Length: 287
DNA sequence: ATTAATGTTCAGAA
DNA sequence: TTTCTGAACATTAA
Image (cartoon, rainbow, N blue to C red):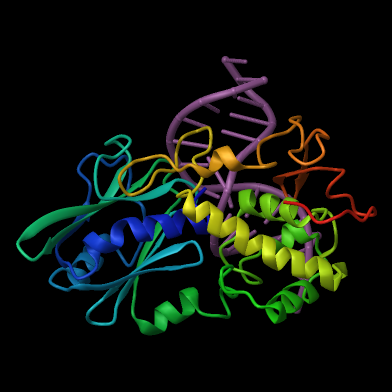
């Protein structure tokens, strides 16, 4: 579930402790249920990274980047249930990989925890990094979109706007939850073809996109009912309480009290208000 | 006790 | 070229 706000929260949560640290060990966790998808192999990664310093901790779309002093970079994809932790995992059985760090005189550990095990950890040289997260692979970051970007995004496909928002080549960082939330905020039907959005709808979507993502970051992300997402200190996020439509099928729309509807688009659940997000009727702007 | 659903990404097919 | 389908895996709700 980590989408842009959750990954941004991870990065902010570990940056202080991790940036500038020397890697003194890197290995699979002793109790791990199974090895994770790791490229190259874990041993090879360890040989490449131990003895080097982490010079920066950044986010690209839904990935965490740990850049090392010799130009190699860890690219960590949490996918559905991956977490970066500094302490206190939800359970020990799903700890997968640990970085042993030293910063000044202090030792500490950074863990990758992943219940479903769909996450990946790659250690890439600059060319590999470019291939993995470059502009031909991932579109512009969802927090840095201009009006021109939105025109480009919408012009490129006839798919429903909800489906287009999830295409990481078009725009990177938005996931299923926040796509529904930002379309509600913008008052746009998820069924509208992306290329048929009007200029004013695109403007509303641009505003709604950054508002929703920044608000979610401020709340440190969304911890859904399964409780999987946690910050670097194993604490829940707070944004789930502020969701307007996501996972609220049948509950009254916070604006007009029409029951929220759940549909399926591209095999993913979409939630929306059929009144505020009507395809035909024009409505006033809303909060 | 099966079956459906859950966030994400990718390979392979239509 | 673009778009759709299923699979990777673990866990919970119905």
